[in-house]
Image 1 (cartoon, rainbow, N blue to C red):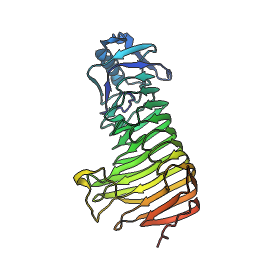
Image 2: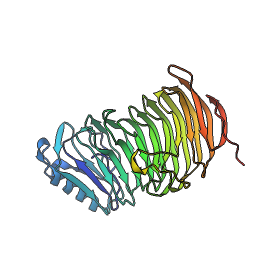
Image 3: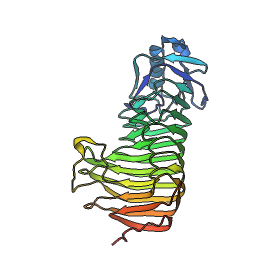
Image 4: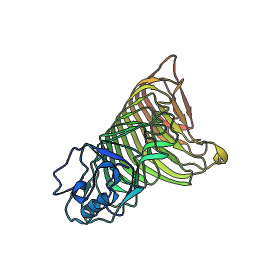
Amino acid sequence: VVFFLCVFLCWVSVGSAIRSQWGLDFSSSNVLNVIDFGAVGDGKTDDSQAFLKAWDKACTSWNPSTLVVPSDKSFLLLPVVTFQGPCKAPSINFQVFQSMEQEKLMDKDGLGGNAERNINAQEHPHQQKHVAIDGCSGVKISDVWIVAPESSPNTDGIHIQSSKNVEISKSTIGTGDDCISIGTDTSNVTISDIFCGPGHGISIGSLGKFKRAAVEHIYVHNCTFKGTQNGARIKTWQGGFGYAKDIRFKDITLDSSDNPIIIDQYYCNGGDDCKNSTSAVKVSDVWFTNFRGTSSSKTAINLACSESVACEDIHLNHVHITGVDSEVVPYTLNVKGRTIDVKPEAYLDRPT
């Protein structure tokens, strides 16, 4: 539920009881309050139709619009509400949900839009994803707070796929899987000022399970990982093809994080899919810069690349990682690149 804003042909799934507190953006010329469209906000009455009416008004307006969900009220949406385009509005601000239950967002086939929200999702873990951005362009998410138990499986905080021009910032995410994950057909993503923990870090992938992969121009900076299973991660399946390139992780703080830096081209979550293959997604032009902090595992830098499709143009610059209880070591396999000021000292194959 949650955060949405892709205007053309986008849809968002919003699930049950939502409580919001607002920071309104009155720069939009069309401000729409769901109460004015019949929402009750008592936590018992189904307010789905009121939300849909407000959305329809915003969507059909030629002006930028802001949907207002008042503070100190609970809104029940049953069973799932879909906000769908195409829309005439050049942008729609949906700044909602200071706290909510069973929050989930999915955007589909978007060609444009804008979204900002204050979200606080506590102790109501979802299966798969809390927030999903799928098929959109021009999405902005900020001031999001998602808290789910570390034991909740397969519950990504925010997942992005088939999208471009996405910005995620100033957010706290704790969950049982990736804090933020980036799937295929995604480009031009900026992630900044994120506190991640617990969780599996910020991940590119997994890529290649369904063969083709295309991810590029990903920028992650000024993020903190506390007690996470991974930090900055790229994960691909054997047998895929395509590419993941122009990826930047910079200014990262680590606090007892397992696998602070990891490229895993042998990723597999078990079952019959774990088969050896000579094809692989090409990983190149990846920079890990200004990493500081502690690793709770012995292997602080883990770069395991394909024998047949080696990782190329990999850069480790100014990386200082120490162990929580013992010394840490690097592991590198089939990696071509360069290092500057790296501790533990890692050796990469020189580019040819």
